Image 1 (tube, protein in one colour):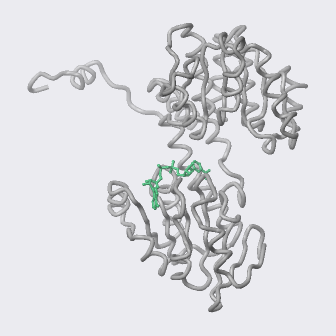
Image 2 (cartoon, protein in one colour; image 1 turned 135 degrees about the horizontal axis):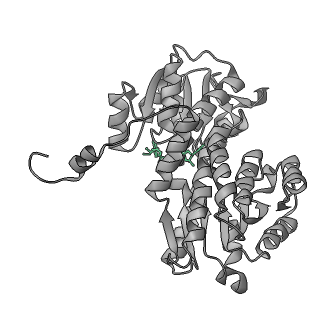
Image 3 (cartoon, protein in one colour; image 1 turned 180 degrees about the horizontal axis):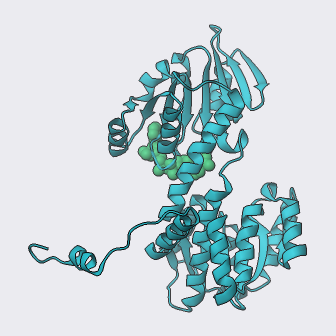
Length: 393
Ligand code: NAI
């Protein structure tokens, strides 16, 4: 995680978080450990609890405590009451800044009148959390400013590339099919669907895109992909990947039109994009795990449809999710945002804020530096030219 490493080196000298109490509720993984170490190097007094008990890496939690002196309240597979107690213990620290992934910590904080008053601000990592925060802000229930790190330009960029690569990785690990010459239908041409289409096209697949947004569909058309409604694409696809964030993208009507041997995968957040209960009801026979992460559904006329990872995120279930370099970007956005919040004492009203453009630009600059990529600098003359409205400029 070279970007975070550069930030950590600067934080260790400048100590922008000296003495600031931070409570973080994140997936306790090796990548998170690097973020926590960075905040610690910046002088923060961090308490970490888990955003989800199933994602906790116990060895990472233990190493953070034993080798880096961080207080961690997390253990894999704890029950609900222990999990809640862990969140409570992180909050008992009376944090000035909070980091959240799914809004559990911030929600718990709002139930504790004394603790909530001392909070200067926080960051939220995921869409689900941001949706809740925006509703709280709309109802006047949010007590402090929170920055929506999910929407930062650099995070979106890397999320997309990470999803593109790891989705192909999941497809290949689960099926080991040759993509060249196959027709791959990508449903949804957004931040994540676009790189999925690019990656499978690069491996020789014929890509068909389905969309509901005219501009995205136009973009896909200009990229050279065939754009079709799913009702038509269903009959010609060999492999289907849904990545829309929507529900019922592949339904019984589509399964009924599909060829024998098609592969169905989802890379969207929830397992509602492919109608799995509908498929199970249509099938006369279901064979689980014909390969790891591949279930076979046999229809009445003998056609077989292969569903990957039970319709859950294929890149996480059948591969390893985002590479660490994707989390490097998201967590660097978080570290720089916390630095900003620490310095903005009392300056921001409660509400949900975007990551400032200069933080995005700084993360991009550090990433380029870590890749030894140099870019041009604007001259004073160019700067004047770009910002002048006078005729002839
Ligand atoms: P996005 O909003 O940029 O793109 C979604 C696209 O799907 C949009 O262009 C939208 O018009 C289109 N769409 C919506 N309903 C559709 C339908 N019925 N048929 C065809 N197209 C449809 O969203 P983004 O960032 O690409 O995320 C998509 C999903 O992927 C979300 O569920 C997100 O949470 C998830 N995601 C998954 C990751 C992973 O690791 N697998 C990582 C990041 C996000």
